[in-house]
Amino acid sequence: MRWAVVNERIEDLKEFSNYNLQNHNTFGMKVKAKRYVEYGSEEELQALIPTLSGEVLHIGGGSNLLFKGDFEGTVLHSAIGGIEVAEEVADEDEVLVRVGAGVVWDDFVAWAVEKGLGGVENLSLIPGEVGASAVQNIGAYGVEAKDVIVMVEAVDLASGEKRVFANSECQYAYRQSIFKKELKGRYAITYVTYRLHKTPQLKLEYGNLRAVLEQDLPHGENRPALGLVRQAIIDIRNAKLPDPKVQGNAGSFFMNPVVSREKFLSIQKDYPQMPFYEVANGVKIPAGWMIEQCGWKGKSLGRAGVHDKQALVLVNLGGATSEEIIRLCDTICQEVKKKFDIDIHPEVNLV
Image (cartoon, rainbow, N blue to C red):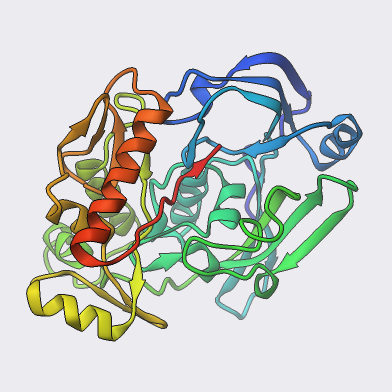
């Protein structure tokens, strides 16, 4: 089977000076970029590189950023689109799909589900763009981007040379990649290739996903379809996460800490109902649960607050400055450390 390429690239490079970034960061910070450039192809990006000077910041949908002030350098944004089947073997279950970095992530998930291709349905409604999925190793409901990424195409912002990274070269870990560590800021992601499956292997054990699905299954069916899984996750996320268009936020502000089994057992003695998830290198404890135990759910500090339905989310209550949000973040980190002797860290990038 063949599917048409969708969401084709934007042809014309767009450039602005003293550009308002309020609509490019979901916290709604009123900041400006000295120079803002949007490109629509690898060739446009490569031609642009010799003109870059000073600090350069590459952004996606702005859903994982907190600007501390105006950016006095160049902000780059990819408008590279396209979703296409890169490889398909008739007798095999796997399909490789190459996606432009500027494609909205959830548009790609919706496309995959519509085609009956499994692998990314648990990542429904995560904000941002495809390029960021490879940088952040986004994850939700027991699935991470690294589970489906085959390779990442990128352009060196210093030399203009193109490089292809295999999954094994990306050094993926929980919300981490080589693009966030030693290669931070060096490469611009242009395309990401994912491995999807014609026969979906559903993962339903995380959180209350299976229970929600069982309520929605048509009578007599015991296996949910991809569309039902996607819709259930969308409903769960909408029920507990605020719309950034209504209340500025960056989704999950903190990463969930992973602790040793000894540390986990020590805490569990005092909190036997504590939620947890066994992982390869220890036990993951939800940061939102610990923040809630510290009494911060629904509370505020100035014009920055903790969402009343999900303590993992910090929100702009209206006119909050980055300093107010950072002060709230620091205060919460200190109180979690004092109560549980566990360090939690922001998932959001401070710029």
